[in-house]
Length: 293
Length: 282
Image (cartoon, rainbow over all chains, first blue to last red):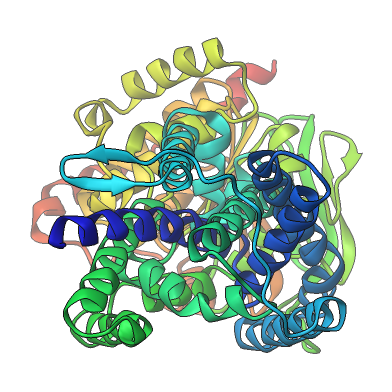
């Protein structure tokens, strides 16, 4: 039972890693704390659902959802967030704007799909035993997608000029421009990239949960933010680690206490983290941004 | 009108200039009607008391602030309000006073970002050149920018700019927060060597006397206006300049540490002024 819980933890951590790393990259490069992130995940899941029920292979549906998340995030920034920024809106005003977008997205999805639950039709494949843990095919795919995405992102940020320019822009956009970097293009790219992770995370989430509705992604935002803050917002590797910790902790809590308390545990960890390391993480990045702005 | 001494002896070719520039963040401008010019292969110093608007002027020249009025001309082209990356493309290197390196990137990655606009092979070549110029950076290549000392940081900031072979290097108080001896090294060795190698330098400095000693031309900025535009030797010989415009006598810097006392006599005696452009012009 314990080993199987570790298995669940790995799956949850994979989904969280996709979502939290995307969230962290988005905030650090674009400087917008996008609280509509979870709802973009849900919207991507609906896209995957629609394409899968239309007869496409459900795993192609996952890719479709990822691409939708990518483009939608880009457009969200281009047509909603950027106009506010251009009028001089700062961090906290932008947070209110993203909360509004979150509510709007949730309600639009509820208008279209109602309060019903949906299931992305995934064929029940064979299950795989590994070190005493049992994984379904879809869980294996989710883990593989997460690992591939993390490796890809690591390579991008560490070895490519583009990735380094992204980190440079996240650290100090003005200095980046004085190096010849067109930071607007870099932030556009960051929206596309983080949106892709957001979309993939959303589809992975609803496949793992089995069923979802218009509020599912929004509810998942707490563990995402907990994982991102735990590892240090703006630090993709931190978010990966945070995802592993939160993923494991919530599944262990489900085993030991009660599955109902998963989110409470995520939130509790977040609060403990903020108590013992208030200087790090979100606060550090945010204050650094304001100095640079 | 600002007083100005005869500009004969300056190189003829103007490289970067601002004309009647007015810049501010809100209603009240920080600098008003400022005109300065930097000619090819010169070291030009801008000095003045705190709050005179020196950094604001540089920000308007490097794409960080848009002027309310006036023009910035680079190599004959109007670049007023151009973005930072466009100016970098045109050969402007800028080392801000604060946040002069990417603290989250390694020394090596910082240098690579300096060469962002260059082809890969050339970046390697230029990084090699910078490491030869600042050998202190060689053993630090893998170190994160936030773990550098003040001096290492400043050399990395300058080195990052040098990777792109800028035609003009704009330095905002490069010696602030550095020890007197390190400040001397940066100004008297590195900056003059850069100018000798053909880079035009625009320098804002708190260490007014040292800046004047190495520069070909000097502007004194007070309360957002150019009060003096002069060949620095004549300024150095005027006892009133320091008290009137710099907030302290133009004599030896008061903040020198004991380690540099021995060096004071030599520099105060014979001002080692422009060896750069004057000879190249004929």
